[in-house]
Image 1 (cartoon, rainbow, N blue to C red):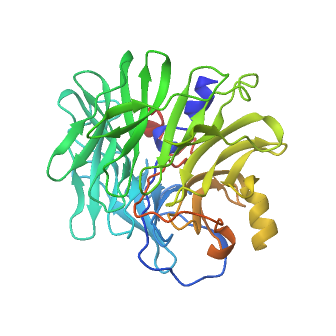
Image 2 (cartoon, helix red, strand yellow):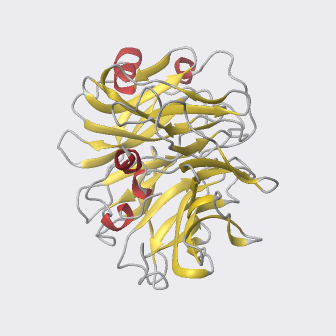
Length: 410
């Protein structure tokens, strides 16, 4: 069960950030489409982050310049375009794992000369059109290695994990402080990784190992790492994957009474008032669900579950509960995706209008996809507006794409 849970959360199969939008974008016709791939490489791509209004998508694709994968950004207007690599890192992969709310700042990881002898041989970067890829360094004391898992909605804070003198450690980066380790939960083997941040970066979520086992955490400068606990009845195991704009709603997965017999996990939604609340799963398959992303106001959650059709993406809200995303696309938006297989969700935009992920396209190739939904149909009644941005841990699910990345688990 532990391996299955964390296979959903490998660094290349997860991560994201979106933000609050300042004005409502005009309604557009719903669509589901592939993002294509970069020229010159193998036919493979994955979409794993989306901006606040859904207009900018980031991910990774094989390319002529990057045979192991190259970071990209995608828009409807301009299609897919490469971002390149850190200087000297052209022999290895790069990928986008965070996009600011306005889509103008991206963050990710790239092969670099400094990290070449480490595992993984990667260094975090921050990108803008003006600066290109800027290296963020690493934590002191350990092997030179750092991996971005998200960026705050305002683009000022990058989070992820690196190798410090103590071991794998969550980090928080700002231009003022550089890369700062966040420590870990007490009592277990030293390990932590930061998976997401609130809009202004003041709240960080992630995962560590406490005295009871793997446990999700919430971090602020005032409190440090605080464990979230787990759902009742299962093995002692939880993982935090995404956070709302204001930092008040956290989602992820935990072992539970429902999942213990199947060896799976159950998606959860956490608030300070209600604690960790299980969201159930799709009917028909072995019990399994994991929440991977949440909308800006914390009202819409997407993730993976198992139904009678096998593993597939879900969408959840308090009014409708957990529903198959594939069935929602077909029934509510007349979008037939039956010629795609193995769909895996990675992210949802802050406004809830756009969902991205990866799957096998009609030709069988791995390709990132974008689903744009009508905002009125996806809106949840009685949603509480918030002012931040949340990040999410997207799932890329690429078995071939970027083998080096997949060796590094969060």
